[in-house]
Image (cartoon, rainbow, N blue to C red; front, side):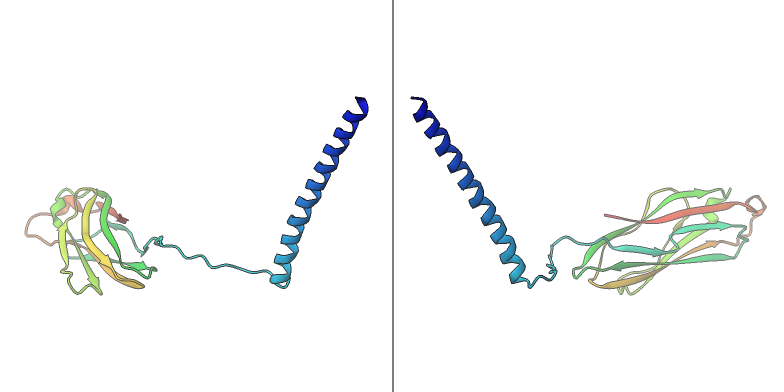
Length: 176
């Protein structure tokens, strides 16, 4: 009986070693076959995806106006670029607005754009946060648009002394 048990143990060990050798050989064979197929050189694979890259907002997107005098203005220029091969919708938002002027409506903000045939310059008071400047627009594939934001301090017939030395600031952001 003990002889029989010993033979079974021996047979199991031989089978296990044979299986282990076969697995090792097949893994090694696939490695060497792959290396021979590529000639031992590194290869690279280009993977394409339908995911879109983010459009890029660049330029002077933080706007600050201080020590403005009546009748004067400042301008900031910024760009939106689409690196994709497809058009991408975008929305421009005026955020983080701080307007310390007493007569806040004396500041007028105007947005104009180069490269947008259906865009009429938009003027609005420099008050309120998260004001949508432009919505429902699409930037064409591989295109850059240039925008100009002008902040004008109106010269009125009333006394504007209270606004001397006051500051104004805001940030232009892209939103989905």
